[in-house]
Amino acid sequence: MNNYDVKQEVTDKYSLRGRVFHKLREDILNGKYEEHEELKEVTIGEELGVSRTPVREAFRQLELEGLIQIIPNKGAYVTGITEKDVKDIYMIRSLLEGLCARWATEHITKEQLEEMEENVYLAKFHAAKGHMEQIAELDNRFHEILYEACNSKMLEHQLKDFHAYVLRVRRKTLANQVRGTASNEEHEKIMEAIKAHDADNAEKLAHQHMINAYENMVKNGLHEAYENKKLPSEPKA
Amino acid sequence: MNNYDVKQEVTDKYSLRGRVFHKLREDILNGKYEEHEELKEVTIGEELGVSRTPVREAFRQLELEGLIQIIPNKGAYVTGITEKDVKDIYMIRSLLEGLCARWATEHITKEQLEEMEENVYLAKFHAAKGHMEQIAELDNRFHEILYEACNSKMLEHQLKDFHAYVLRVRRKTLANQVRGTASNEEHEKIMEAIKAHDADNAEKLAHQHMINAYENMVKNGLHEAYENKKLPSEPKA
DNA sequence: CCTCGTATGATTGTATACAATTATACGAGG
DNA sequence: CCTCGTATAATTGTATACAATCATACGAGG
Image (cartoon, rainbow over all chains, first blue to last red; front, side, top):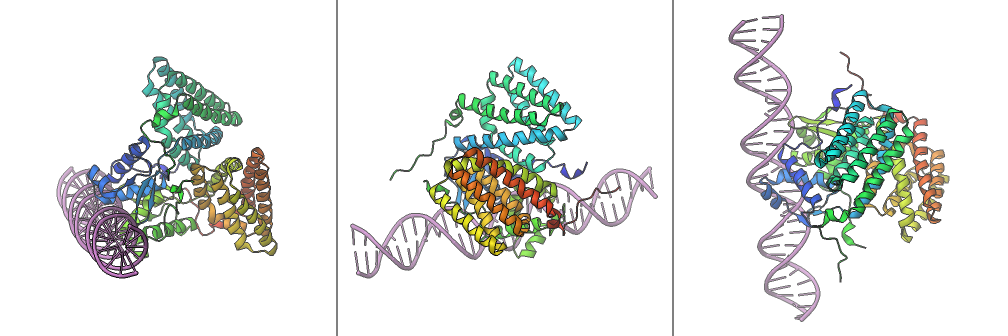
């Protein structure tokens, strides 16, 4: 339609700044840094072999993503992500994914629907074979298709952010054949609701899909994803 | 509880970068720049009397906020905000404000509830007097209290972002005594549901509150808020 | 021994210089 | 006249130098 939206990733990975951004993002989400640990511009720069300039720019972005907090003239501190944050995100996402499915029902294109059908089909195949890596990939892609199909760059933007935020935790969760299969069956039902132009049902199913995903994650021990991160404890006097 | 969360604004207004960020944000939301207009680092820097460094950092943040799009080695282009974006945001917000009200019901503190009661009381007073500026202020604050009371930094962060995003449009809308009064009455009902620990009702009321706000905005002519911005038209061949 | 002020060092904030990349203009060749 | 390649200019990407701010240590004074 309009060729303005040929947008690549919001943050390219091929500039130094982009690399710093993605590296720090990964490290923070991985739990490499303690919560409230101070990140120094020179130190990070030296570790990655770059000057302060790209590091600073990456810091500003990470701040807006909520991963670090910058106190002016003082320093950058890791915010981290707690179990409660993950829970909150899933609750928020459950609502927004529902809305997304509703809108996608009204706006999905033929091409998108075709890719979605292929996605579900392939996922079924890989689930039977136990190819966990591919299942995770297809799961990601399924949701992305949904985001793109909703025809709302605001909602798409939000959901992609959240999606990336919990990606690390989620990948671990999907490494579980039972849930992988169940998840894909839910995808299929969502897709069928969309094909049937049943927006109410699509919304409800997508909503429940998120809740199921979260509950499965809790059941399998969400905390394992954070085993290497110390829980924040009340500082004793 | 923990004193880590004494966070000030995510982007301070007293550094050059902060000033550039807020200035560009305002200008973009105000429609000073055409959609898809290219922003040049030197030009912006000269206009504001600063070097490229703070401008670049501000650009990175604006990109993450979705207001501009940066194409590597090429330039920064204004994304702008369309009427559809505003509509989408209100639909998204209606869901999230509902969730927020639900959580606030479970987590609001005595102090927050007191400020909320004072807020509603004052708003009633100013509405009767026709003090539009104060009504707008109190309206903003009411929602902020709600955001802070929900006890979820993820949700609070999201809602504050959206809130700021549509603030300019909204201020114009509230400059309307009828809606100001109705809006405040809705605030009161939400508050009472929270006081009665009726989370279901609080959610429903907050949800409807957003929808009403949006519909009122449309009725009064959302487009007026964008009278100085050209609508994007399909480029003819 | 404690308190406060100053000096010093460390760290962030900003400006500028230079490198890399991209867009444009122009001319040679067909 | 058109196409393509090269040169040039403009713009972004990065590194570094300098300024401003903040934290710490240390010593004078009480």
